[in-house]
Image (cartoon, rainbow, N blue to C red; front, side, top):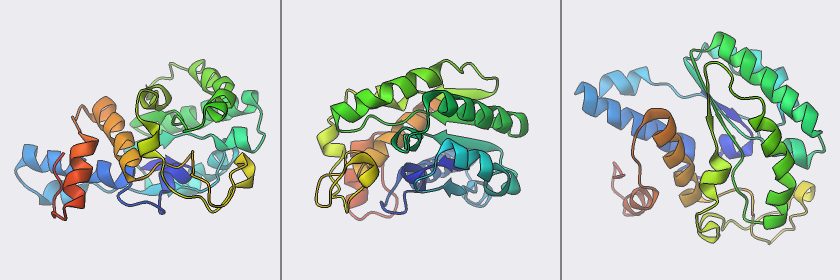
Length: 222
């Protein structure tokens, strides 16, 4: 199961990182089990990403959006919306701690991924206090911490952020400007890469995958 904001809901981009992870995990299990039906039928991925959501929303939604599905694993990503909607650093940290503690008490495996590096230095600078605050709540038993912010920093962000925005007043993003928060298909493939490698130990080449996918093959190589 995936819990997060618009980066996780990702209905606006395909393939997105959730779809890629599900595809790769099923492919790897098919190789290991020599039976496509076991992973194809047995691995079910639920999208509990909510556009514009904050940690306040996640606390409210846990029962109906997560525990109602009785998941074996929950992967949480983000969220920068707390900062953008003026939720304090302290509340953000406390809310996230509660979310992860409640999840880890009921779910076998929990993964927490930080926000991504945006393609705007001033926006990243304003996120630092929130990113640093989250580090202080770890370790949390049964929760794997994945620092996507630092993993994204060495990448060529101009290649990963190319969507033209329809506007976002909360981050002073005007219609027609390049969206510096929401990554494109290749950016989503890089999210999948880092999660696949750190969580599942699966090697994944985003560039190879996107080239293969764009060539029109049914089962893209990675």
